[in-house]
Image (cartoon, rainbow, N blue to C red; front, side, top):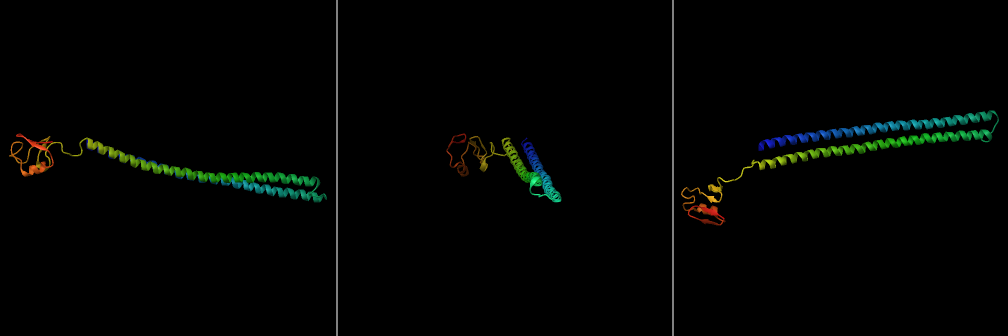
Length: 216
């Protein structure tokens, strides 16, 4: 019965460690996946940021073409491009272009910030998952040790460890309870104890009756 408990505990401990290792590997895999998703999201954000920057460049290009067209038509009509209706048209065109350019640049900066947040967030999640993996592995070893310790205690309670419970005592004195039967067959409660018998009983209080020696 005791041996069966020990075997069961060993099997359980091995199973616990195996489960802990499996959980640790799964969490580490999730950490790698989190980092990969972060990089992928960051790349997507940066691509959108690049698109907004390119849009800003196109706005500037349109502004230059519009200004050139207004100037050319004003010159053809022998008009001052910086005053009157021509000047007002130039101002309106530049204001609209500047606003569109500002929107494009702000959008690019926003997407760039999102890309940075995606990377940092993935690193944070991955670190937490790796910590959880390490904890899961450590806890499996601790649990396995507890299982083995419990089995050892149960083994000792079931009589797995030998001990003196009656029967022969040291120096072949054959102690049983408080009565002693010495190895000298001429004395076992009936004869006279030898010097070896006195040596064994040294340090104890005892009395001698006509039937046996009794320790107190």
